[in-house]
Image: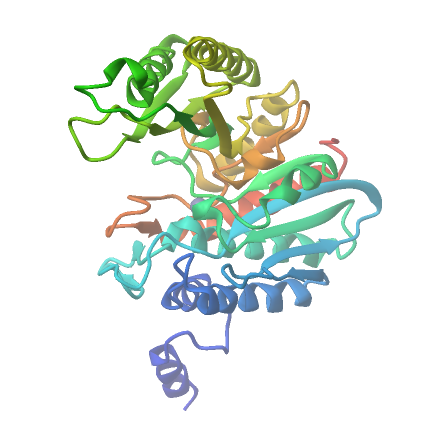
Length: 402
Ligand SMILES: [Zn+2]
């Protein structure tokens, strides 16, 4: 009789009778939570909240007054010491309703799970929660205070909550982020930052034939600025400046262009390189304004920084902390992986400050994130959760102190 019951149970998907990480992942992936699907993003946060509460966390759930974004979760579990470890995940995906990639599927050999957000970041949520559960079962009151930060809109820069992230960084002693590992299973010890600029310049319209001399051409000026800015790209410093958008004037041949706009994405791997770049941009704009002033317009060119994510690079302590983490992965998976830099930024960047160790890519292994082939290596849900638990045990036992 018993055998029959078990076999029937195994046919029920996502059975609540025994916890299975793949089933829980399936439940998360089946909720379509593209950043703009606010209601569904909140459903993912609900599932996270239930499990965090069970683990003893106090939940601070913040709402977007404009209701354009889902809720942010900031959960806290007080430790014996005042130092804190912040764990980062996110509930949204890049797949909005029009995406054709839907639902959770498992490969025939049961090695891979497929679905929107399956590694980014739903698999990361599973790894973090399962690792926490293993760790807290043995240590209900952890050595350090634990905080979990789950953004509803990481894929679009965590607006409207990001303004508080710097403060969260100041209140923590270590950040562990559960974005997917790199393709070969390596974890992430640094990420480039980005700063987005929106430039505007004004000129003076005039008839291009009859009154050319009376006009001040904003397009000409902005093209010069764009050329100078593009030339600041320096691969040897890992610094890139991309002219993403340039427009100006009316859609006419014979009118001197009266205004122009430019959008630029810049990426850098250190604050020093960023600050040097900023100085050069300031100089380019100041020179442009001097030129335009001579022609009769004061302060013709202005700019706004619309996104500003600092880079983080390995700090003094990073190699020590990363080595401890890598050792745990090696012990569980029986293979060597390393810690590397990543070109893209993520939520963890916003918490960066000098001397703060940030490790990322601690989620599952897999492939093809943000594509219709996004896949998770199902075994890694368990191995990376175990590695996270073992890492926390190293802190608990005092072998690693922050
Ligand atoms: Zn992500």
